[in-house]
Image (cartoon, rainbow, N blue to C red; front, side, top):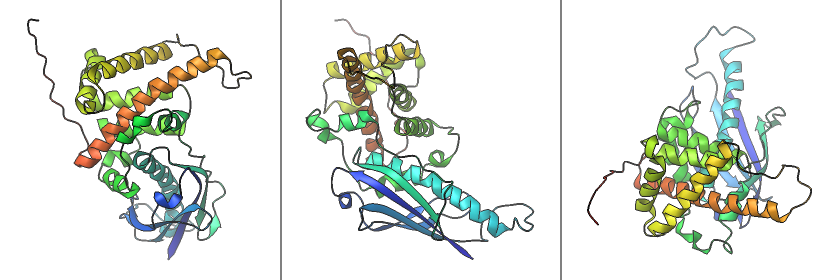
Length: 307
């Protein structure tokens, strides 16, 4: 007995979708069975389609399976739920591979050709700070961020157990979960999620978090920005985060009526500072992908000398 699971993502892309999605086979992790081979392709309608066929009755599920809750019936439901969660993971990989290039405006999950009505996938559109960051008229130097085949990112993630764990236990796992929240909501709290991600990745001593972050980003980004620019942006980043978490930052209401000059000033601050944080995090992740590592081990030396 088999079950066929399908996801159809109605997408928005500012370039031909085939620039980012090629017809490919890839492996998708499931908790109670071996990784399953899936296919992905672009449809004639300009959507992304993912298919996987799973053989039922072969999982490592344990329990007293009595009708109507036979092993196959239980697997039928569990695999559908896991497949649903994997769509969010695929979007995560695509955002790292080609930041801000693809948005899932609507996602339809089918099982054996029938829509799973109750499995509602929220639209997955990049936060506005991501769109701002990769607007070439605003940030012409953004070409130093690489683009990847999304499957390169996916295969890197597959080898990191904490990416698939519900409650991450490692630094890199926490980075992923914070970044998931950043991608799934577009609000001023995005700055906080980015700062938590960067600190999980780069900070080992909370007493000197700002200095550590500035120092390690200077090491990583020295070919792109000078030290003064990085230190200044880290300072602004921490100031804004502090004002948010301590209730001192003015915000416009979500249901604003008039886009005033004050609103524009606030938005501009969040976008510029958020863009620096996002680019820094993205660069770190892409550096790790290129190096085939899942943590950044940076030796820190404090040197005192007479001027």
